[in-house]
Image (cartoon, rainbow, N blue to C red; front, side, top):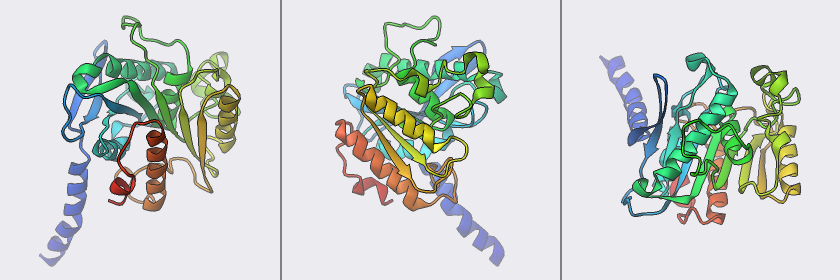
Length: 290
């Protein structure tokens, strides 16, 4: 009996934490055949349909092959608590849908377009939509702001799929042999969605978080992307985390062994960046020290 009681005391906080980060709603943004893709939505307190709140759409990582929206549940809830309408998006991946990175990019563009098209009913400002994500999710988030084309057929292309800002966590930035993903995109299409090869002027303001010890996506890729973006006249900040490996940005909800100090610093830096754009008014001290 004593062991059972101790077990319950250990498990109850975990259950409460899991409930705390559950989405407020799930809305279907795209249907392909029998596949329905949803946005897991988090609503800030007091939101009215007449509001014009900034929004963030998060995309999970997993090499375009696996993963799920739970990866960004904690971040989505925290930024909703700061007054933004937030979403953690589903998109097609190889293990479940037999798809390619190009299909994932198309879905990311569809998600941004859907939020903008439904901004009036969501209480969202269509001119303050942020694309964000980690690893392969960071890649497709980056593609919404950089890559021209790969728009879904049948959608209203008069509604832009381009976000107004990007927050990228150890994103795939080079899909050639110098980076990650050549096998998935193939030699014939190796630069088509390679962000370092597609940088152009007038890309939206961006921030990139990357660990110097990343052996999956080389830190050099992040340095090169930032340099090319700046040279093209774009605002792009690189936040380097010394010695950190791939996936260092993950929350303690998604990976319990992650260091809270590192996670909090990433949230702080993200808040500072979004505050500089006028997207957040809340002090980061009010939300990070939970």
